[in-house]
Image 1 (cartoon, helix red, strand yellow):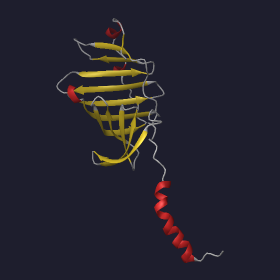
Image 2 (tube, helix red, strand yellow):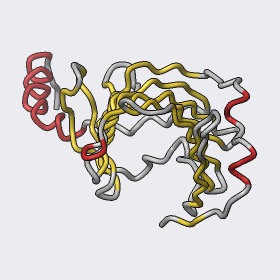
Image 3 (cartoon, rainbow, N blue to C red):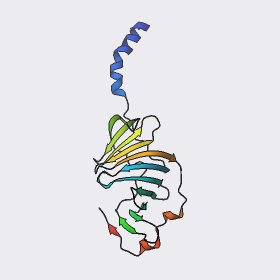
Length: 188
């Protein structure tokens, strides 16, 4: 059987509707091993905050420097062993030490997330994934940068800046001595 050019074109045109089913489902881009993000958070019932996030997987640390609305600057240092320190500095500095039982998110924490398609959010066309009925993660279709993530408890995180490879070199990431004069409590 000999096919001429018009037969080949006809076959391609007939096959085009089926090609949409052959598209690959996007996979979330793993987080870089180190990054700095400035985020705006709507905490639902607990107000608003701006957070500087410094993610450092090789050091097993995730640092948030948090400015809650009309409140003291709060430092949240999370370690890969599941321990988190929440502290303020100054004469009346406070500290809570919490052991969550899990460490910081792995760069590939979205593995096995369910793809929900594309959505526009915060002015960007994003791929959207959901994982464990807990997190909805929006990633820019073009740049693959995170744009937003929402949690099942109503918290919504919007990424304002995202710097790959940035490292925090600040002595304030070490919890103050008064954090070690108390009991650690487990949260689960």
